[in-house]
Length: 172
View 1 (cartoon, rainbow, N blue to C red):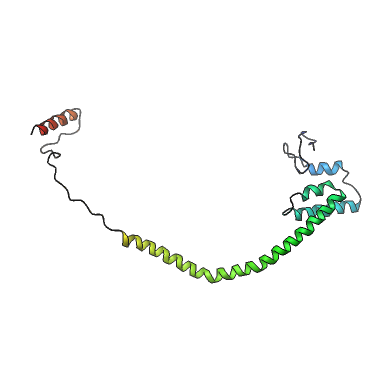
View 2 (view 1 turned 30 degrees about the vertical axis):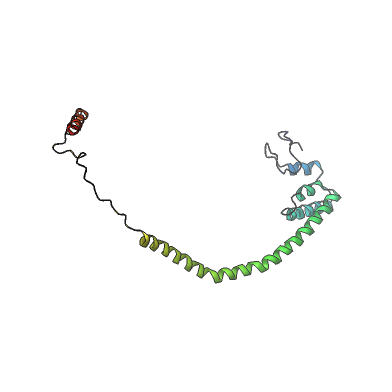
């Protein structure tokens, strides 16, 4: 379908123009003569309602509802019936599973909280208890590395002074 405002090409399933956002559903209703008989409007509204309901299982239902054909109406009705059966099965399952899960959580929550708290306490105390003090290596005297006497301040002549002292210590 071409948009009457911007002329952009859109698929039939689109409700709004991709390019400018114009409501294409209103345009298609105007072009198809949406002011039909009372029963025709009711029929279209029921198809739209059933199609929206069946959309979560059958993604093609809304596009079939816009066609307005007899075949599309029967297909939408079939989608609605199948969706209802699927929903009844799911409701029955959830009606049994949700209370079971509620009681399991009700019973297990205190125990799980206690185990989490005791687990945290163990890890905290475990770190403190299991941590062993590090042993320091005994210092080994190295007379060559220690300079006795005055140490000059850092300045321009520092490099020269250090080189001289290094030579003196090598000569000894």
